[in-house]
Image (cartoon, rainbow, N blue to C red; front, side, top):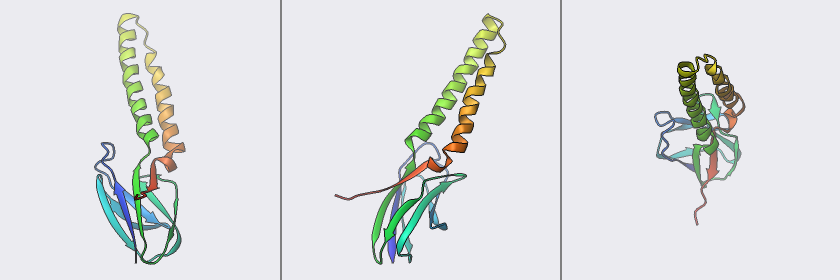
Length: 142
């Protein structure tokens, strides 16, 4: 029996949601925030592991499993994903403040149209980075 230990560090974003772990498209189990979980499988040979949350996922992680082997992995949110979402919220907040100032001082009512750009960026993130939201890496013990 092969064991796979997966560690998920604490992150404020997605803290209440569990990641689903798949091996060759079959659900292996779920892992919560700040949890280390041991999964067992009978599969041996070349396998692919993937982590998913809602419509977002990690790229396929190829693994070579042998009988009675032990793999240690880390699943985490990609650093650019969390940074990109914070840019979206901060830019939206900035534009709302700018809209208020321009509307009240210069009577310019069109600053809110600038919200189109963060909205388009959010759509880009949802469509083009959905397969890179999470990542799996192997933990190497030294």
